[in-house]
Image (tube, rainbow, N blue to C red; front, side, top):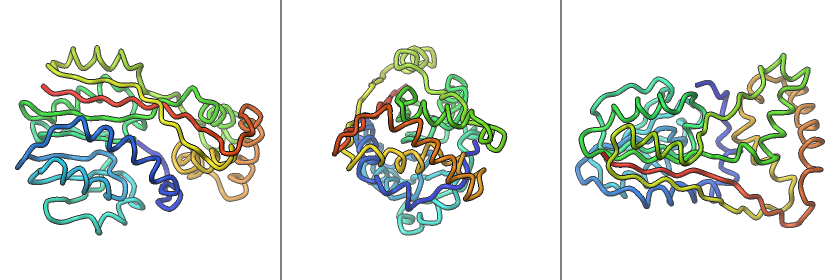
Length: 256
């Protein structure tokens, strides 16, 4: 998984909006007093602390591939919580956790059938899998990003943006069944965010979706990319103030 250099300040500009799905997913998970959990794609670790306390776990391990994000995790470590710099795409532990949790991270990893099988192998008997992935790839904000990244000179410089690996909700449900989960919840949720204006969507996606593009462009190229992105995106959106940005996410929880 290579997503470039993350900017914690930019990512957390919409901190409240990004945390809502985390707590909705967390509400599906049953506590595991004295158990062991992992938070895949833990970011700065602030929400990992909330996960740990909700689960009443003995130990919670936060994993993230971004050194920039993990640099802020020290404030949330200790008392059973620790953080590890690791690539989620190579996760291959077995029978190690009572809860495997991931909020808004696994859409960066390809081949979700293989991914969920690998994660499932990391669960102990009776373990819980809880995942939230963005599913907004058909919104103009994301379609425009892929379209501009596929234009020259950006394509040659960056390699473009690959298609989303996120599956349809019903495909996740079938996959969980085949993996042997006896209980499951798969939910497609639409989150509405009141942004000051449509232009703020550019700021939103530069903190997440466009991170790998930014990492491959110098400052001048990046400025040209953003100008072109605005040219493609903004005419597709209503010029309303505030602008209501709809964002689809899939939340899934399952227990063996």
